[in-house]
Image (tube, rainbow, N blue to C red; front, side, top):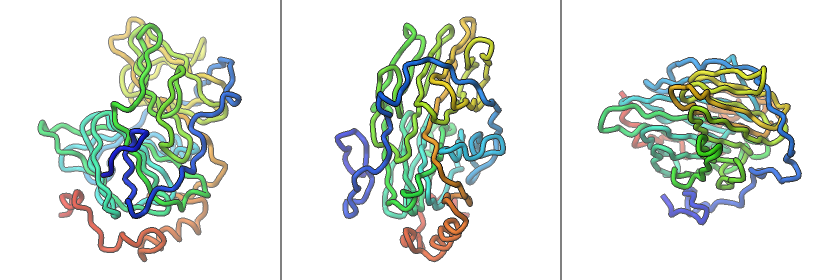
Length: 338
């Protein structure tokens, strides 16, 4: 693993294959594109993320990527994962998307066919651009107390012109995430990606512009969070009960729900009742919709059926980005082989 860059990000691109100039769209829209009004975004729908099996022995609560919310551009999938000892996500490929992994508890090891390795721990994030092709393994740290490793993984579509870009990683450590407190300290916001109340995140994390905020509201607290106009947005509730919306449209949402907002409006309003027994915690996610078709087959996400067929063929024949997949097995994934 290479030394941290000037942005405090760890770049795991091979030294023999230097990282090209960042080609993504601006993460923070210009001030001219931000409105000064405060029209609340209405709730389009809210639904419980049901638990299901994934990987080998892992359990996930999937919301984006189900019949309830499919291809909510640019978002492809959101999993709230719980991985106990002995479970995990052994060797598997990707093409055409980016993944954002946010560890809430425990740790996760990562290894790919290019020799990149790393570990993220509680509060850390990994931004991975699969681009033209990657094969990797994601395995939980075996905690001494036997506890599970818990986190979120978000899949984000890549613009068509970047689907065949070179793979890359950005690891963002917990202590590098800017934070801000509002409403007299009743609301704590981790600005993972984007902007909140004048606080900007680290830049150049992902090619597709995505805002990701981790918000904790103490009983009696409230927040109005501005979002870029026209972006798709949702909240996923991690803890407690939070009321979203304003006035007669305000709705109380319990734990493990996905709250999808309408595009119209400028702010997301959220609050926790003063008599609540615990704080409310949620991640607020917004992204620039991509004007392109989504054709997906498992880990391959392209804009046409031909593109997906080509990805499958390239993986099977070890070409066009998958050359190093031939005969490769991760060290961390070998424990899953029976």
